[in-house]
Every structure is written in structure tokens, then in C-alpha cells.
Image (cartoon, rainbow, N blue to C red; front, top):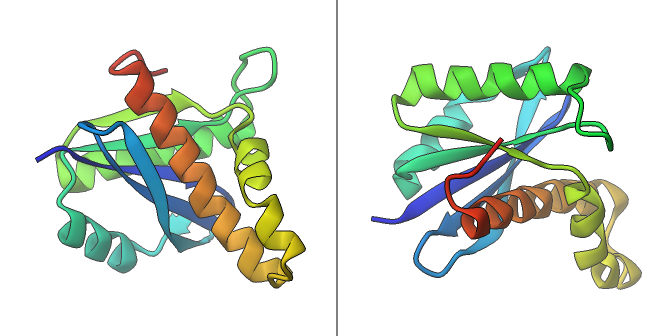
Length: 143
């Protein structure tokens, strides 16, 4: 199987995408609540059980200069918890500009009148897809 799950970790939501190594494509599938830096593990367990990924990819937020920042620690901690919980490979990938790219992909939907909260959740899932596509296209050369 060549299924991969990707994550865009935020302080309130985690965008989730599913991708395929064979086609090197990804799509946003969900957002997971994050409360007090703790994800909704039941929802994550359900997604893992549904998709049975062979690898998990977590976006690593870096500054424009490529330096770590406070949110980098959250992403690294989440990646560590994923690995401990599921015992499958977890890769980190530079996520600079992924939210901007996701917002651009969704610009037409916003102009079509999507609600701001719903739109924000969809952008998080789309950002996860952008992160996952980057990893799929660069192979194992992740951050």
C-alpha cells in the first residue's frame, strides 16, 4: 500500500490530508481539534484506521530564514507523539508558505461565499495537502 497521511499542526486545528506515493498527489480530508496542545486522539485513531497509512508527514513551521520558531516545537512534539502511538515512520517537512498556497487554491471558494470558519477549516486541510505533496515530490529528503 502507498497511502500517506499529512498534517498541518496549529494551535486550534490540525489539517489532515491523504496522499498516494504512486501518483504523488494529495487531498485535504479533515480537520482535527487541538485543545491545550493535545489533539483529538480518537479522531486521529479513526483516520489512521480508515486509511492505514505507511508513513505520516508533519509540516514543520520555520521562519522565512529557515529557523525554528515556537510553533516548530509543537509540530515536533506532535510528530513524536504520532510515532510513539502508531509505530510507523513520521517525517517532518518544511511547511513555509503552505498556508498561503492553500489559501490561493481556495480563493475561488471564498469568493463563492463560504463561511469564514468553515473556510478556515478547509484551508487547514488544504495546507496539509500542500505539505504532503511537497514531501511526495521530494521523496525522503524531508526536514
